[in-house]
Length: 285
Length: 162
Ligand code: FES
Ligand code: FES
Image 1 (cartoon, rainbow over the protein chains, first blue to last red):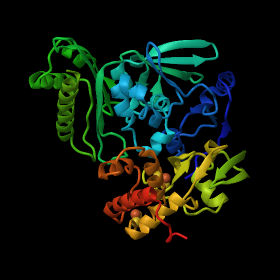
Image 2: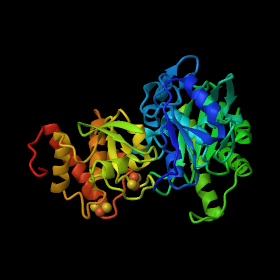
Image 3: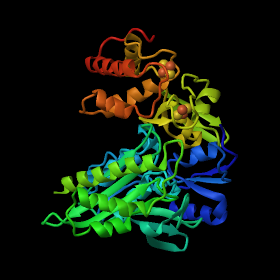
Image 4: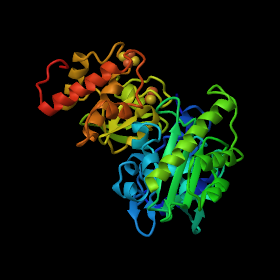
């Protein structure tokens, strides 16, 4: 399968990237690893006249701990999944990055691309919501920061304008415990659904702060605000988890499809969610 | 557009269309048909090659993205890669053989990537999640990988592949 024809650019610095984006705007798209966009181009779900590969721009591939954990847009998913800095400061991201697709896709794909593509089945949007991550966005008129909760608008639609570049992912909720619980029918495939949990406890074992994100239960990743608010200040046990799940159900849309009926899916999601909360709570103690 | 890609130690300079995929570059431009196209939708891993030593699905990489990079395919004569080919023959890690080039290239990568980790069933299964086989049921593939690991560690003499 061949993509439709396109022009291909490899700018060497941010200034030339901005210039290209300003010139082609909606007729262009940034290519990082290409693991989401190339399949779409091949299937001709989309056709983009100007593809701008950013892999030759120096300084976009970094994983650093400053005040926040900072990740560059060209950091490959496999690099994040193998990084000690990430493992020590952000176990949720570490775990989730190692569960994206399969080893080959992780070697090529980037965390930034996963976020910007905003496919509701992608893993990173829910993880970013659970982490309350901030995104630094750059274009020819300057920089701004957008919180992940303001970023994902709809399937494949984000707060990015056609000349915007995601230049940094910042995670301030570090030193938490967290895990990504992903349910798939085929190991390398998209999640049927997944739950990202990031948690920190007070000394009396009540929840100090918690972030919960869900993959593939709506047209975008979902941040379970009400559930987070409900769980804060509580000790998590079976009863509380079930109550939390009933609140969660109001925030998501599950439908019957070839993977199962709505009821079956709810049952599985409940198991994953309740067990997941228990596990991360246990780890946090 | 011009690309400069090093494949199995040899430098190739070609004028290609930007939409050309790496797998088609290898198969159609360079006649290296050992790399297979199974699904063409990033699922099966038959098209796995190494780019700068890391496994990628060449049906999901533009040839342009490999510009100035180094590609290793199943045709390469690296002694360790040949040891893996031997192990697959000895342990019958293939039936129809369609998935095999991808399996072997991913094996090459996962053994290098293992570092000090144990190459046990668990590790292999996780690392092989991007490769599908319709014939073997995977058992013999896992055995081949373990055998290959031994061979490489013991630097056993290589015979079958050449
Ligand atoms: S042909 Fe590339 S993954 Fe199947
Ligand atoms: S041996 Fe036939 S597909 Fe694997």
